[in-house]
Image (cartoon, rainbow, N blue to C red; front, top):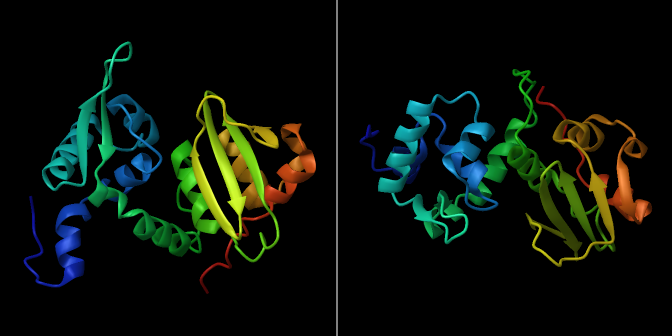
Length: 210
């Protein structure tokens, strides 16, 4: 593994997560473990060899580890260690900073990237006095969003969890409504539509860098 050979804490951190794709792997794992094929789907620009190498390096650094799921799945997944999960505020801060830059890619956002974008753009002031539980169903994936006391939590939906509203959308359609100003009535909503539309307005896009 390459090193900056610099005693600064920033340099020491980048010795472990500064290589290409490393922080995007962290982004993809913040909401839970994934199989290698799932990581490939979320990072289509990374070759299989590069992704495998980066995962090995990050495992050696203690940022993530591998484990095998119990039957009937019995598949191997990658998940963040406690050290790796501590990178979440770093990733969200970078997302907020980067969201003010012009778009340079025509690729679609991965589902996990879209969920992290919601977390990074949440506006506590816009949520003042508002509480809700909204399920986001994006194809086969489902996430439960909870707003309470000006805070925002997001997790993969567990069986039996209830929500006031369920929003059905593809990732691109949800992104267009939340960040690009497409009307929310273009989305299918089960349950309380007013709650869903109020929720979808809690993520203002910051002004672009001059």
